Length: 179
Image (cartoon, rainbow, N blue to C red; front, top):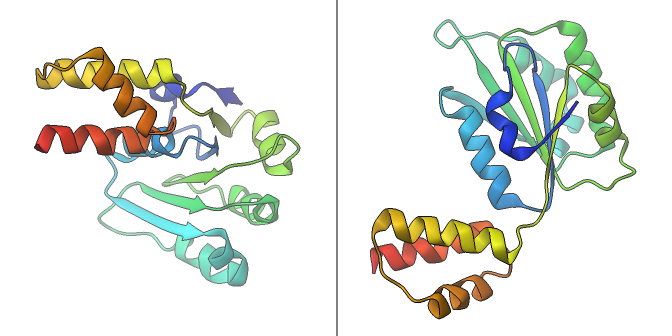
């Protein structure tokens, strides 16, 4: 099932256990990942290479439950089509307390991407690069919240320096705030 990145609050983590983030906008991916994981303390990060080298160890670590945490989030970075087999195994286990988020920049013809787009239980979210208008809106909101007076030409300079990268923009804005 495909949803838009601004509809991230509509995700029901009790029903949708596997989520795919794809696209080039790493800054927005990280924002959405933090939004989903803000109430869950137990978070594990994996690279696809680690999982493919030892799939049994990965599945065992998923199956081991903690007495103190009711939900766990597993983030898999740099995923390719090779992980589909392991995802099918995980779906067969029917794990209720685990949410898996896969984050990668995938091509249109990717089997992983089409797998998520066609399945109703899984969610895929596209993260397209930001444009100047989006970055301008973000920077204006930042300056209004912080009550900082700045000219439009200076804002344009900051946006041009960021090369349409949201993470770079927030880094520059934080430098201005601390200055």
